[in-house]
Length: 423
Ligand SMILES: Cc1ncc(COP(=O)(O)O)c(C=O)c1O
Image (cartoon, rainbow, N blue to C red; front, top):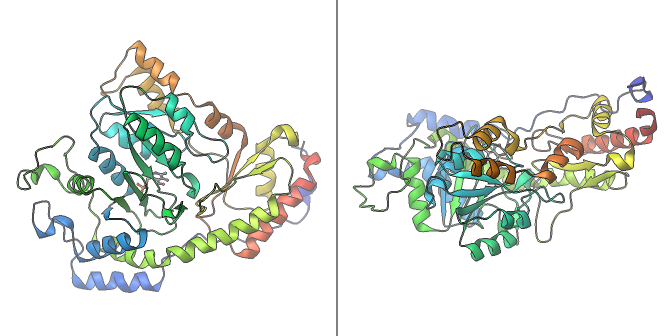
């Protein structure tokens, strides 16, 4: 790159943006209470009162049910565990297929592998970054049992369209709403609309308990199966007289009392955290929408966005310059939280090797048909977007003030004014 005016002049942003941190004195107070009680977990892996956990776990689950307006809320020690419970609760057998998006975190797909089922990747919609229902329908076979929709970046997947497909082919839907706690879709909270859904409470999310997650369902039987998988199902099913035992291998996915107590306080803050992220996003949208060669995400009808990430696309053809050069110039202006690297999960070595060559202990092993399966999973829209166009701002990871958002807009404008010099 030539020596640029951008780098010679003063940077627009000179401060370090503090990380998003919603843990304050309320959480410290309630954690102290739990510590003083000496009861850091009250789960028992046998049938009885302790099977469903301790006082704080039960209270947090009650609060989640009320807040998210759902019949069952089941806490877990991570959302990865929640996804494993969700897939296990469905009637999935080894070799069954579940259609999933490649634009997600790897756990959405590995939860499927965990039960020896096969993740089949459907491409994404370039407008929303969510799974494309048209491609989902193309990838259905007689082995398909479910769709895993991910509300990526904090905006709902197209559940109306997916539900139509699910009805037509008799499939179940799991909603991975890890990144979208509190986002709404046609008036309902993300994660509560599908057969099973849920949110992550890991450290990077809007609200967090360090590690943790909450599963949602309105179905009594699925709720029971997930509670069993969370807590050593195999030891309990005889006493509970459960006959349909497929996939009822249990784990210890139980949430501790400290995390649950933190969750109680965190949930109270979710609405105001979302309000702040949306305020920052609207400043960015107002300031960036006029710039040429940049495409912002359109919020879909009857949806709200909670901006885990603020995504956009850089158009090389219009700007005559690569996304990478723009990224460097924006970073040089002091913008923090920019991202061009994201996972295309279907391209991870494990999926390429296991599904293309079948070198794992999984049931599909080497055969020509399964090589075809991997090819069928190529997702060209997802690949092109990530390789050339995607640029995100990690709105949930940083605590941007309104002034910071305005400075980000200024920095973009400065880079755009000098774009010819970057070429
Ligand atoms: C879309 C998605 N799914 C699943 C997970 C896994 O959640 P956890 O880290 O709570 O296990 C994450 C975490 O970032 C995620 O973003």
